[in-house]
Length: 85
Image (cartoon, rainbow, N blue to C red):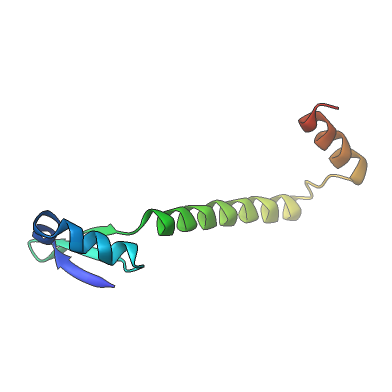
């Protein structure tokens, strides 16, 4: 984690970009207060994939608790519809 004033982004974009692309997360401040966070595209993609996974898991757990389950024939029928059989 690296903390920099927001002016650093304007004045030293290349260095900030190198930091971010080396795996660092850069926190930018504005007037001494946290303003934004910079991260690489790869890190962003991993984070959003994990958030989607956690969301899907929460939905699955809720369905399980509510008894919203499918038997094997219902699953097979659903898959066959998806693949056009």
